[in-house]
Image 1 (spheres, rainbow, N blue to C red):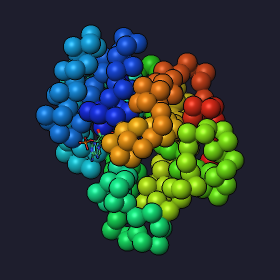
Image 2 (cartoon, protein in one colour; image 1 turned 90 degrees about the vertical axis):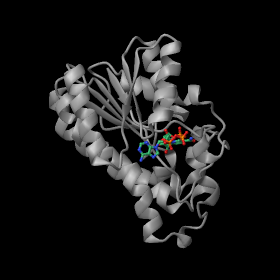
Image 3 (cartoon, protein in one colour; image 1 turned 30 degrees about the vertical axis):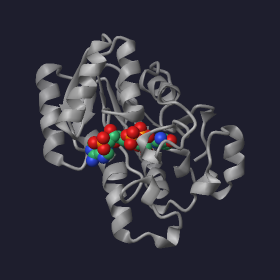
Image 4 (cartoon, rainbow, N blue to C red; image 1 turned 120 degrees about the vertical axis):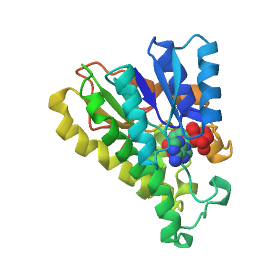
Length: 251
Ligand SMILES: NC(=O)c1ccc[n+]([C@@H]2O[C@H](COP(=O)([O-])OP(=O)(O)OC[C@H]3O[C@@H](n4cnc5c(N)ncnc54)[C@H](OP(=O)(O)O)[C@@H]3O)[C@@H](O)[C@H]2O)c1
């Protein structure tokens, strides 16, 4: 079974839907009871074995409770998608577009979810992932976290014209949080490879969701396909890579 954090809407919900379509039991992680239950019910109505798991990636108690309930019901976890993420401040529309306008507090709030949330959930779920014969961990990254893209936007925009890196370079909190998130699979992959656990960062492309006030270009359905591929890699698949719709993204 697969756990997707922030799966009540956007790309996360679509990842859950597509994993469910492959026959997996899907645990719909969401911080809000109502939104989580609604999303899980919607997926069940479509025929997926979906269960809501309350999970706020900034709340250690909720992670411990989620790990306990998954342990009791399933005894293991096959896939973890660290999808939950926030742009900055109150959202994309209010996020400062100039790096120099960011305060440390604004950056910290984004790191709590995008970076520390992924580390905390992975740490809490690792004992369960270790009991799977072929566990996969997917960190939902962004090309905006690519140092290569931030230093040479044109080169990466050529690879995927849906990306608009040049205009988003000032998003200090979001971009640097995704750069940090990118580094993490490299460390995990090195340690977990011998146990058959594959860990990758995956960029979905610029997608129409609430996160960017629906300014993206891809549908959530299109964006989720690359995450789902990374979540269902064969045993000899890549690990410690930065994957994207167009293959490997530059770090
Ligand atoms: N859209 C894009 O173009 C794009 C591009 C690259 C990467 N991404 C990444 O894709 C991921 C999903 O984003 P999206 O575009 O689908 O945005 P979205 O529709 O806004 O979804 C974000 C999800 O994260 C959840 N979340 C936020 N804070 C949380 C917390 N503390 N604990 C648990 N869940 C939390 C939200 O829950 P609530 O509903 O409760 O707020 C929501 O379910 C993010 O990591 C984002 O950075 C998106």
